Length: 232
Image 1 (tube, one colour):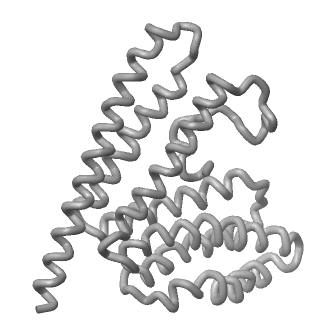
Image 2: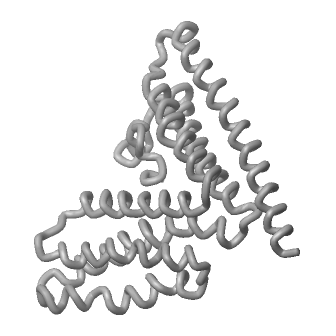
């Protein structure tokens, strides 16, 4: 009975995901045609940034998301784990680091597969406390043993709070959605991605047609392809 129920649930999930992806395909196709035609009617407007964004959606998001959701849940888990790695790497590159910080960075990277292992086996208790409790307690030890207390507070704090909490613990919840709610989990992740992209597009269109002065120029740079999830 359980096997039949699981099989039926899997069929429902797959059907709903295919319908959702079909709607997104139609929306992207329509948007591509509209952006191609827009410069002919509004020659004084610059649509290059929006065209670059749509190309990013096609190649970098839609195709990858289809591959991750339609084949196997493990593929989706690995894809988000890789996303966490690149997000953490990008975060460390933005920080002013020293040679003495490399050891703690290595330990931070090693926490990523362990965190996702808890998701894979469905152990919610360990997933939710592993980084905020255990990693926060033991991660400073290699830093103290290796390089002492020089710059200790700075390197540990931005590794734990900015790196592990935001880029690993926060993003890893995307991978836990399908585990926590198998019926709606993949669509919840898709819904979050759609909200992120719609937010960027609305900001860009408002600045293109309505906005005259940037309220915070340093906080609202031009939209760049490939910075979707990290920037938002």
